[in-house]
Length: 165
Image (cartoon, rainbow, N blue to C red; front, side):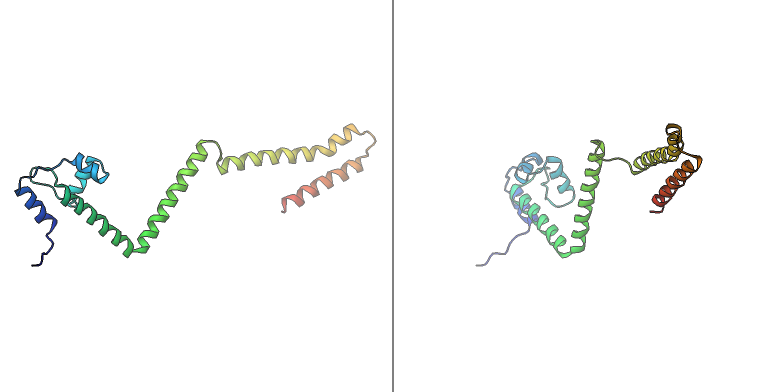
């Protein structure tokens, strides 16, 4: 005599006819490691069979849940591109959150703010260098107008060289 496996629906019907009491979504959730809401969502999606009285039969429910996980796994294995996209999305999300955390902690600054600050510092340095020949002339009385003009040309030449890269 050979036995053929019965479907989850047939097993649920047999258990229900035998009068075995069902368990609640919360109780089933304990076995599956899910919240009651998640169990109910799986039941609504047809992944876990529900009894007519609204409860669940433990064995068919666990088997159906495991089968749904297996089928999801085989779907993911059959589509490596989808897996790659999910991994890429997870990494991008993690990087985004890491950047947000570093910015909130003050470890990162906005590029525009840094650029404006450096531009201000460089303008101040340029102005100070351009004022150097005049300041030297006022402090060193022995410098001639030609000396001051030569200093001015040299300072401007250095600034020009720096601006060219």
